[in-house]
Length: 112
Image (cartoon, rainbow, N blue to C red; front, side, top):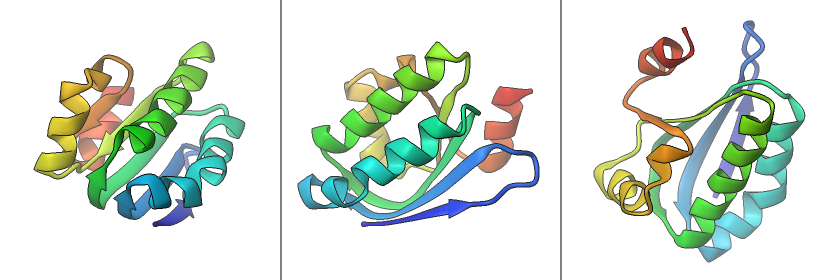
């Protein structure tokens, strides 16, 4: 699992994930992801276009981050989930904790 933190001029936190959020992939990025998302105390946009699988452990890092952001009135927005990942997130009802959108433009509209 790869994770890239992208600097944005607007101050939002943007992270690109690449790979599988299975037990191994989640373990590789868990602490780094949590730190990047929660330390900025700003809305977080996560590019999921290259994530091909998510397990319950992978979902957990999003739940923890979304709850931490919500405490400071910020949002976690997942962008571009493939059909299988989106289905898994919807079955777990995670759209109640975070935004699932198709594009970065949609993410910006959520924040407007």
